[in-house]
Image (cartoon, rainbow, N blue to C red; front, side):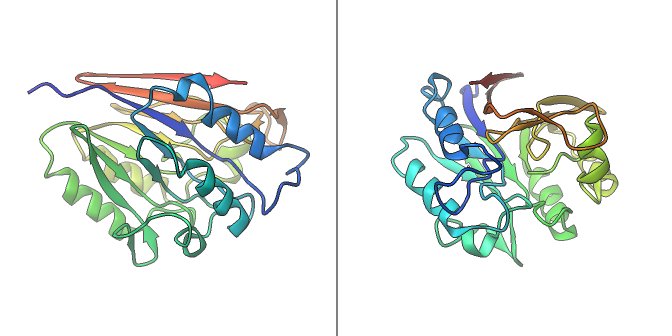
Length: 247
């Protein structure tokens, strides 16, 4: 049986503040809306927010704002927390019923014939119970599965982020992911840059940020751009095609 093509809109690292004030001199709310209202989002089947919705420490005003903007969308929305999010606060504004286990947000979403898996790396690691769950659930699938998490599970060639803020237990995560034969594509954020990284037979797609882009070629923080960027991924039978958009 053929599988219907699925187009996913991917927005990451919004860093929305508590109110309308600029964040580091950037109108992050306007940047987010440029992505959400863009033509590239007009024909998506699913929207995924890849973490760091809030700017620093899970500001309630950030989640209230994002929830208001997405409430009338005609497509489902999947959300995972990032390291600047507070899951207990997020749960007051978004529907995480059945998705939170032992204080972590991880779940599976079967959509249009595609098994989509979501992991929680907000604390800088992926917990052992999540990895065991992923292995067990992936083994139940005969076809290809797709994984979403905030932190990339590998170094990406970004000198600043690789050095300062990479996933802490990436070797453990890589070992588990390598043993899942039907997983070939992983979608992440966190790095405020776009990357396509080969991790063995798996490809890691790093979604850029709507807040700002961080320069990848120096070991210290460098602002590359305050313009928003975002991504789409079309998943079909035996193909995955991605595109990056900027404003």
